[in-house]
Image (cartoon, rainbow, N blue to C red; front, side, top):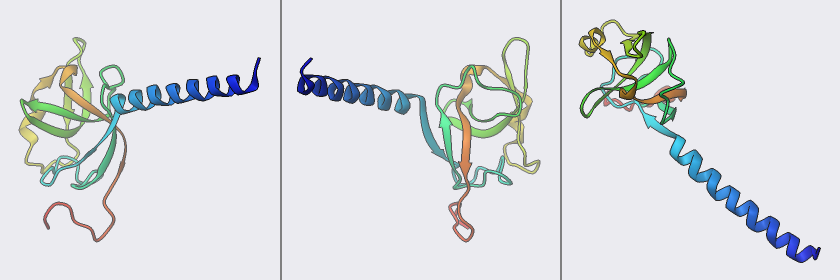
Length: 133
């Protein structure tokens, strides 16, 4: 086989694989910043924390997972999964017991309400304030 033709084929195949991989990673993973005023987990995830998330976490959600969950249409909370009920519903619990969002702990939510699973997080550097204080 001609080395020049082989080189072109390898470059084209590698470029195609790179594009497909980038699209896959973009669709599956992303980042979310904890918004100002979100005091549900301010001990470990204070406002301004940058979170690397999986966007389609339906299967991977487990007890003690940190998730962004849609508690009402258009309202998302950062919380920890307390329990997964036999029917697959999720119960949440906020780490901060003085949070202004405690009323959302009383309900169970379907797995489809989980919009992102937090894989890792990077809190803001000390001295920086993203929550307006």
